[in-house]
Every structure is written in C-alpha cells, then in structure tokens.
Length: 467
Image (cartoon, rainbow, N blue to C red; front, side, top):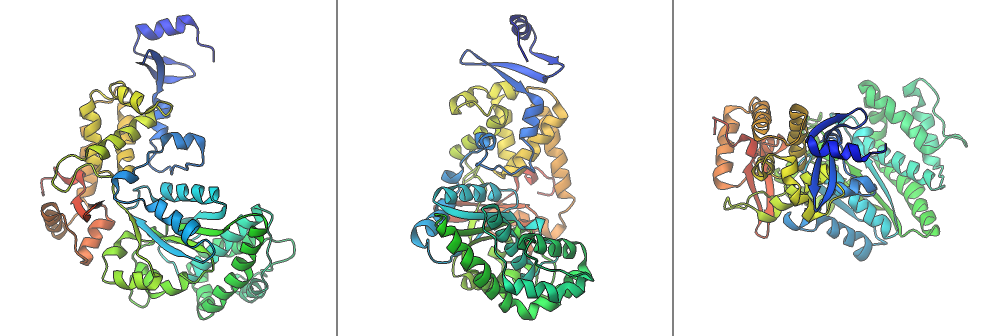
C-alpha cells in the first residue's frame, strides 16, 4: 500500500484514525522516526496460548532472556551437559516449573542451540499424542517411538524394526482390523494410527496396555536396539553428533489416581522412573512442579540420578518486599516488544507512554502478574480486547484485574485461604499435599535467588478481602 504525503499530514492532525486496510493505528514519534502501532497486531502478539519459537525470525523479536533474574542458567546447564560433558553417553534430565512460566519457549531455545552444536533434536508436545488424564509408561514409549521415527524419516532415515512388525500383527485383533508395517508404510504412520485410536477410546487403550504392560522391558529393548542405536549410527554418518529427545507437556498430566492408589505423576516418574530413564539417547522430560514438593521428591532424584531443573517466576519483588529492578525492567521490555518488535531496548523504553496512559500503569501490570509470563500476557490480551484503543488506561486495567481475581477466588476454600496467609507471611511452602494444590492452582509462585527458593502468593490475590 502506498502512503502519500497527504496521508502523513492527516496522521499529524489526528492521533487515531481508521484506514480500510490498516485497522486502528496510532503514530508514535521515537527519535524523529514515525512508528505505527497496529492495535490488531499488538493484540495478536499478546496471545497467551502461543509459544515463542526462537528459531523463527518473527518470534525471535519478541523473545526476552530472563535467565539473569531467575537464579540460574538452566538451559546453558542442560546444553553443556549434553554437548560438552556427555556427548556420547545417554543422559536423562527433568525440567519443571509453573504451567505458563516459559518452559516450552526455553526448551525450543535449547533445541536451537543443540542443533547449532550438531545434534539431531526431536522436540514434541506429548499432549498431542497422549490423553493427559490417563497416561501409562507404554503410552509415553510409543509416543517417543512415533516422534523419533517421524523425525528420522524427514531426514531420509527410514527404519523397519522387526519387533514392531510382529507387535502390530499381534495387537491387530484389538482394533478388529489388520495392522501391518509394510515396506511402503512408515513406522511413525502406523504407530500414529494406533495412538490416535487409543487416545479417543479408553476401553481400547486399556486393552492395549494390558497387552503391553508385561512386555514393557521388551518394548524398551526394541526401541533402543532397533530404533535409537541404528538411528544414532545413521545420524553420525550424516555428520550429526547424536540424538536428543525433548518430551514437553508431561508436566500437564493430571493428578488422577491410578488403580494402585498412587497419584498419576508419582506413578509415572517415581514408581516407573527407572524405565523412562533407560532410553539410549539424550532425553529431557518435563514433569509436574508438584513432584518437587511431594514426599517422593528424594526418590524421584534417586530414580533419575539428577535433580530436576526448575524454571521459576521472573521476580518483580525481592524476599524483603522491595522491587526487583532488573526483573521489572525485563518485563517492561517484554511488553513493549509485543507492540514494537523492531525497536531496540532504549527505543522501547521511550515508547512506553505511546502504549500506556502512564509508565505507572505498565508497572502495575508487571507487578500484578507476579512475573508469570503467561499471566501477564493473559491480562494484557484481555485489556486490549476491552480497551480497543491506545493508550491503554489504568482504569480498564483495574477492571481486568478484578475480573481475573474473581475467577481465582471462586476456586479457593477456607483452608486454602489460611495456607495462603501463612505463605504471605513466611514466604515458605512445605511438602504438605495442600501446598501442592496451591502451587498447581497457581495461587502461589516460586522464585529463586542466590539463597535458594522462596515463595509468595499470586499478586492477583493480594487485594482479596479474604487476605
């Protein structure tokens, strides 16, 4: 679209205007350069459901590195372990944090760095393959086999493990239709057909598990011997350093009870953790944050031989209640980057007043988010939706905060309010099951500094009358 001199003169006369093709926009002058803010694009950029993939140029513009205020360089530690300390030995690591705190974005960054180091990386969201309310070890193993084989097929490595050929013939009766791994059919396609059917059919899923459960050791040996080992060999022939599998979203498995009476997270990662660890390649699993505070936390570490890596919140305050200057600065950068992704850090700070009615309004947004990235975006997304224009006002933000607070308080019972008062006072959380509920429900956030972990209530609840 060609913009004439007359168009720019019209912009100078009117702060807001509507063009047929552009939607609502506003002109902002930063260092004598006209910058157009498209409210619709700003709204789309704040979608809290979208995971940033730093491998994509557009997403990279929105990415802010919070590692300097999160207490440790977690992704760098995982990267060093795989690429420097144990490149030729299988490793297994656990990664956790609140849902929505940025784990997927960081794991995709790990994927990019590993690929730069010469590794073939299979990253996938397990929720696409699994029914998260009902997961067993065989489900996870089949999902990994499918995703690995599919990724290998994309780089022209096709494997036909004999074990799977016989396995598919035997379980064909469950599906009342033959399942064969023919010369033409790819392994990933056949496993995909099985997992798709069982995900939607609980009875069929139970039958398959009843068959696979006593054969779990054989399934693991097959995956290692007929899939992982030849895959790594062929990848090295292509010049790769090895194979890494990143299984995301396993932290979202429900805490339903298994038939044994054990909660599903403890069953999968504690009771059956030894089997998840046995894959002959580098593996990173996400796990529910509540496991860190359970009575089985020590057994979890023993099973996997490593401490889980925890991605905490971005601190907006310090332990003593004072403002965390660096954390707040990074959150401001994250917000303005969604509006002006092509500006540098200093230009973004100069643009704050062009997006919000005052810098204090932006600070209020960052503080009330508690440093939870997705919560911040959810509030901002809703705010833009209601305001529909720039600058965003403080009054409308308070409306959004009240709305979200009401949604949260409806789920809190009297006993949990008492626990929240204790957390607000002493900044600690015990291993009690009730505290796990507070963390899983995101009523309480974890932060880390040089002295270790500390906790605080979700700032959205701070002004609730119950507190």
